[in-house]
Length: 189
Image (cartoon, rainbow, N blue to C red; front, side, top):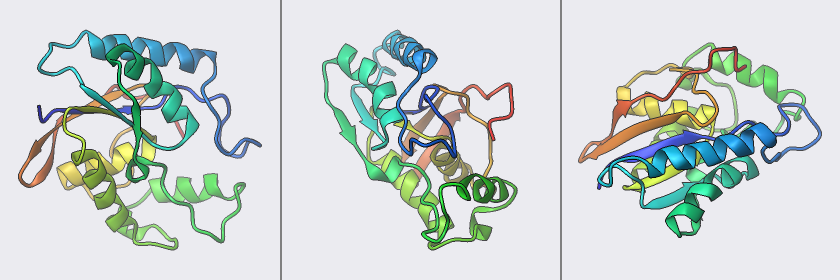
């Protein structure tokens, strides 16, 4: 199967700027993880994931685990589908403002330590390397994959809600966007 589902993690126990740099899920997020696992398991067999891949961060791993348990597989960690790297000179307190500025523009305009347009291609390559998988990732990384698949240079292509499922197919040229996931009804940022 060449279908790949990319799922934004469930609601975390804390947000940007809080003391915990790697929060897990809160009670709502844990329920969201169980619900998205059930939804994915209910897909027709030819569209149902057979593998589970996750960002290394706890909120993604915890969102991925119910599906991995249902499928009887291990969660594979792939750093390429992880959170966008923050410039080294920024503190945790400065990260939210940096991200908000980034979301207003293009991938090629993000100020930082690396080529963020190239980073988007790395995310898309990471997603594409897991055909048949459910890939649990982040708001920004999910936008990166959609941007590459559609050729859209904007950072904020859409606002995926928690446990939003975005589907891609593979071609020889890379990812093809099949369907964007549910968007957040409130401001995410």
